[in-house]
Length: 186
Picture 1 (tube, rainbow, N blue to C red):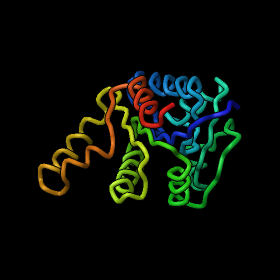
Picture 2: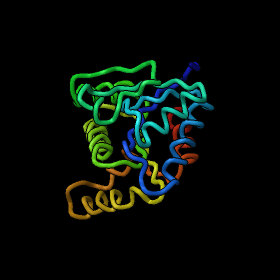
Picture 3: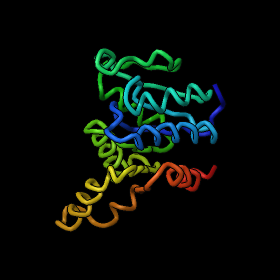
Picture 4: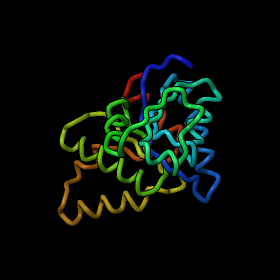
């Protein structure tokens, strides 16, 4: 395992998506993490984009920490290659560790679990419970509808435009790494 300078919690899908670009981006992210000595903190599953990122990092000698609740081991598979794996009793315990361990949060394409994690850390930042960077990687325009919904929430008067100062949307992995370098100063 390599030494790391920052831990980045990555939220992403337990599926690979329909387009190869998602898997390619996951592997590219892992490569950048290893090159920049960033530790991956992730949901601990062995499938989907989670598995792609963690396996690539392990193959490249990167530092990986997984957190998975007991009940998901049968569904997503406990990642047998992750040596730093925490098994929790439930999702709430898992998410708390994921949030606490990260110096920044990076959201890759995923499903409702990924949205749940994004909205919770966004809410926590809005409530000033943390001031850590939140970056959405909008691979293949995956997050366009999310961005539209947040703009609509502002337009409808349920939030103000300062909401968009709490997170950043970037179009690709290199832009996400550049944003991390700027915000964490490495």
